Length: 165
Image 1 (cartoon, rainbow, N blue to C red):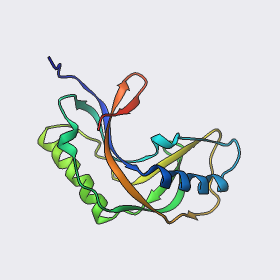
Image 2: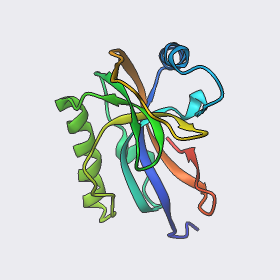
Image 3: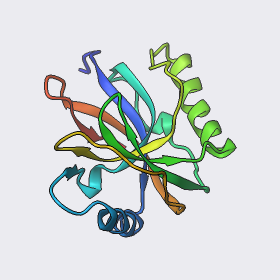
Image 4: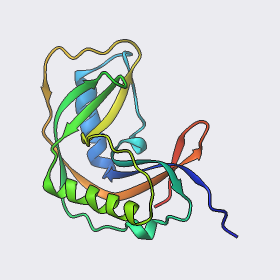
């Protein structure tokens, strides 16, 4: 019997591993040394939508979207709010439509989601000390979408997420 529980979750775009690896190697050449802790390759993604309490009755089949477009990166940035090195991306119509499809399905299921303004980016690393970018660092690449992930907290106390799609 399935117990109707909720847990934090988010929907994200996963990219092809070889493209992520190539991109990270390029960026690590700009930021060598021990000042940054890089996220593991398998955790690099673009978050589309965060849900503080996603019911476990929501299934991956409900979010099986066809994605045949690429994500276009624009520049490296340091986000002060959460002190991360991120790669900003273009907010294309295709990306907005994909996000809208996910949110529409969440609304149909009466699932609450984060209503913050959508600023698409890919988190790459967090600083071991204060991170300051002295100039804009453009990095224009196209990343292929491998799949859409629905990630739920494996242990809500620790907020370690596992893919369920």
